[in-house]
Length: 378
Image (cartoon, rainbow, N blue to C red):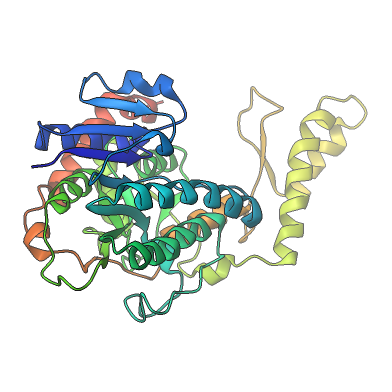
């Protein structure tokens, strides 16, 4: 019988889906959602769900703890400070309440370039990747929880998810919006895996893991990769999206991410393009410089997007010049690493409710009802 479930970060996308799924699976349970924003109570129309502002306010012996939260800032120093504050609260909760088990949702991105992600733990912790503040935060959480499991002898389940796809998820919206905006998504071949996790399967897996008893009674630490559609290329996701959006997915200029690797030369080109893009609309409206501006169009390979809107101009990017945000997108869509289901109990993964085709059917329904289909027709 499942009693109290404490969820940190239960008001986000995954959290709301998870709470709904757990209430259906365990009608007798009560759920405490830890959030500083108590106005998010409107997300939950169920008396079994209560919102608590601080984890330290909870006193529930042998409760089950699920952590979906992580702290992230632009810089590593601020990220570390934010992490320390939240993790210390979790550590105190574990010490005070001795939860029956902890389930932590991590990311496959935390592995960075580590070749063998299952080796040398918990005696030897991995080096935390500083590829981004996101991977840094996720890495801090994993290493700290590995120590916590050993220190307090508590069962620790770390689930590394892929890019979460689902109705209304961030990655589903990014994919749809990039297709509508005619930004590149797919490669010329299908060797780049999407490393995706479907929300319906993830919620089901967490619900099953709550009552699962591991055969290895001596071990208290279990790390698993949960990217059941990890080997599905982005091409296949976009093929299903275009059935609804009626938009052909765009290809990257090059299939090799090294082609887009940042360097000072490309940054200078990007800066020049941005300066021209910002200055041309103002100069274009002037009397004396109007003709000179027209010549600039040809010299700098600049195109007017709309004839009726002279101040809406875009610089053609005929090479690999892109900003950091687009480069980060390229790294994800042109990622040669492939993560699948590893370390997760097979008895659970065999029962996952959504196949890829079923997941796509669900996504297509969402695209129709959410309005993306209407937008793509303009």
